Length: 563
Image (cartoon, rainbow, N blue to C red; front, side, top):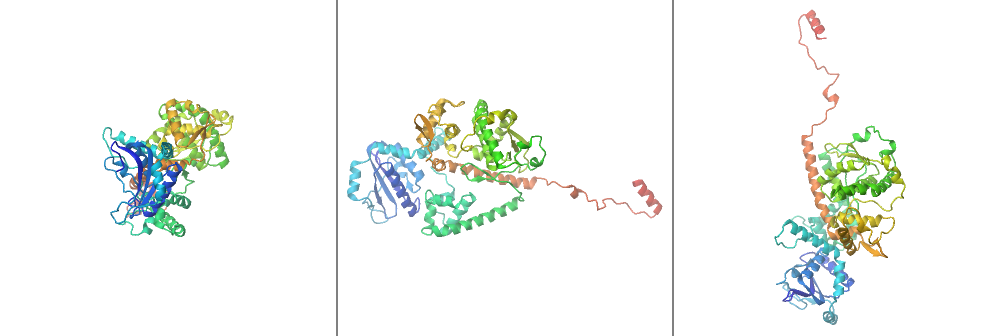
């Protein structure tokens, strides 16, 4: 039995089961889990079963409550897919098969750790400081589970529910993680591998990203290859690219004719997303603005200069003005940042980005973006101007310019270092309020004092203090000589994966694709085609007819009367 009569736990029992993932994934998880425990200063005892599973036992000097042990094991489950948390989820009946026990398949649990070493580990046990170090290393996973639990309680208040699943994978992502696939759908490992690769190509991954994932969280795909990954992966990746390209081209040809487009927009630290369309007429109509305010005919250097000038205006004036707009002020500030980010990415100040594209970049609903865009245009004092109204598949077209009243304000201070972002994926989990002080630390002209971010206008001091403490616990920022600074070794993309922000982003993207396809299909059925003048009238065809007459004189009089 794992739990004592009082519900306390004196040994963490980590069960890596082959029913959760393939044997190769179990071995890889056991090695990585052992490295994590050793890095936290925890000693453990290991054994293996005849079925191929692994058990890791972590003895503790001081007993911990069952709830705390369950949280730690569930946090480990988020990172290691083959870990079965059920023994620690049942206080009354949770148990584990210890070394030397008979197995139901025949044979016994075999001890991997040398017997004398295992005896010393179980005798000395692990101090509370080492367990605290493990809790610090699992801070992103613990925060993710806590947010999931709060959302569940908010949806069903007062109703006790089982702990929700920690990961919401798509079926193909689950195959890539575990190596287990539906044999009724894929008859062989090769078909399962190709389905996963087609999925990654459709998400616009690169081959290097796939290789990196196979060495980390997608060990199941590595298990599907076995020892042939180095030889087969490039070949099958090329096949997946060809298949996905051909399928996408044929689908696009069936839905609508292809139209020449410019560059596509890229979300910051996410897969690239295509624009939803724009008004071509707005780009060719004459404008009353000076030529230096239109980016369609200007180079890349001018666009970067314009974005840098607008950033100075944003931080010096627009941020302080938008914060007076109440709860919508934070969303308006990040929407303006998204506009500048897309402007720099597309290298033009004529944007035809749709509301759904902005919604994906900001982590909000597209209806919210549709309400905020006109409001931002009205409050921007001429920075953002709509020059073309969307129709059909085309989105509204906006021109971004530097008004004359802001020219001196934009060019007096020096430009800020770094890139401007909309909402980084990691802040989909941490919230917009946390993104503001992080941006202030990352893009400040000098490292701010530890008390400076807590005086950010428009946000309460307590909320900022809580978010700063949370980011410090996640290793994103740190205090150094009385000032905040960014921890450069922390990868925000990997942290977003651990917090579940990357997976949460897939759901709205899939929903938007389905809704956009349904909307385009409706337009194809109901939109009346525009007829040209030559289709209405042809000058070479007589469209009148006079009845024949027997008398020639009468015929001439009829023609004269008709004329």
